[in-house]
Amino acid sequence: MAGTKALLMLENFIDGKFLPCSSYIDSYDPSTGEVYCRVPNSGKDEIEAAVKAAREAFPGWSSRSPQERSRVLNQVADLLEQSLEEFAQAESKDQGKTLALARTMDIPRSVQNFRFFASSILHHTSECTQMDHLGCMHYTVRTPVGVAGLISPWNLPLYLLTWKIAPAMAAGNTVVAKPSELTSVTAWMLCTLLGKAGVPPGVVNIVFGTGPRVGEALVSHPEVPLISFTGSQPTAERITQLSAPHCKKLSLELGGKNPAIIFEDANLDECIPATVRSSFANQGEICLCTSRIFVQKSIYTEFLKRFVEATRKWKVGIPSDPLASMGALISKAHLEKVRSYVKRALAEGAQIWCGEGVDKLNLPARNQAGYFMLPTVITDIKDESCCMTEEIFGPVTCVVPFDSEEEVIERANNVKYGLAATVWSSNVGRVHRVAKKLQSGLVWTNCWLIRELNLPFGGMKSSGIGREGAKDSYDFFTEIKTITVKH
Image (cartoon, rainbow, N blue to C red; front, side, top):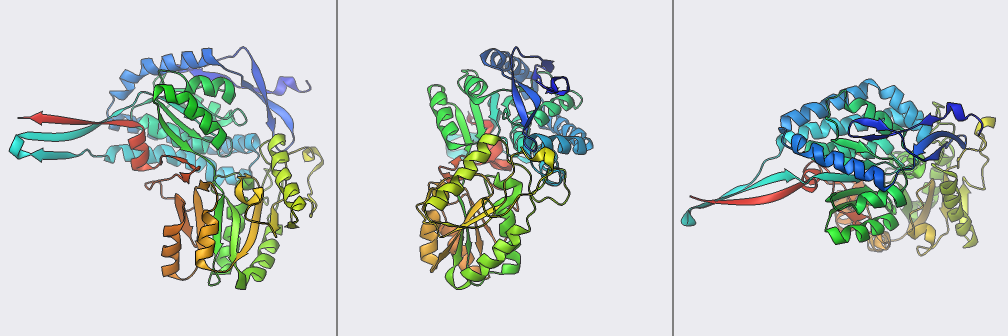
């Protein structure tokens, strides 16, 4: 293989040490289509070693005070922040996202995840009630669960991995984590900071490899009582099956088919740039991205014209291009899958206004084999179409008209997912009414992706089970116990 000597070779991180693996898998640079990294192809043996290390580290870590654990998490955050540029460069190259997005969102948010849970762990209180007539007092305590199995996806690699590791550690658990085999580099880099930050060996173990080998070994391990997973619904079904014999605690953050509902009184000057961003940010590879845009009929023509014009200005370029709004998709297979939806839409008689098959993609010669795709806008498509019901997870969005409030609520809810929605209207009463009736875990009105980490994050229906956030993550990563004392 040409250039083999220059390949980045990752190693598993178990019990505070980097360990080589007997076999490896190739990882590709999405912007060139070339192999640039080799990832351990781990299996049951590596998971067994990681779980053993995590179990042995658990008594010491869980007995530390919240203040001590908080100090260690803050130290990880400080070291990560000091290496922000190095991590941003690695995340952009590994995932295909723009360097600007990695610099401004992925790595800063990873830092914030550690800081946030380092702080929140200091502010949880327990409940106490008295039964004087029986001479009893009841109180609750929360204790860490044990070894937490954490499985994170490829779209926001370090961001979503740290959103799991930080609360698990903060609550006193030890961790065995499996990042996506497609985007393992920043997780491997994070391991180099843990010892420096004072994380004891065995508290965080990261094992690299594929879902069928590493993921299944982790999920089915009898000594891993808790699994937190972010990813696709089919994988979540498999996790549920494997976990069932052990009655594990599960948190499953899955996909979305998120609607934007744009009423005739919407402020289009704010709505259009925000909806372009909500449709195509991170190449559309965010579970919260908008993929169904319902526009009230009276403004449909104007909205569509302006939306397509704004989409055409959304530049696709190499990740290091400071003017690029969008980089490369994660893999060749994923690019083909996303393109297939556009082909199916055309076969159904839909119209493609811009993007795939309509506009020309201009890229430098060395990036011609990269996994790039233009942001694509589809109209004249039925609600029953796969493009309107299935999660595409790419830079494709459908724009359809609607008449009434009641009609659009029914149509927006008529999919199996229920993760996020956006509502655009200047009528405050309507905003509250519609938000309440949408079957969605998050509803943004007149904005998108403004997050408050204290509040619950998660979806309804096939978008998952459980919630994440300050209180919700703490509840998930601990067990509650009621103690009654008779005096």
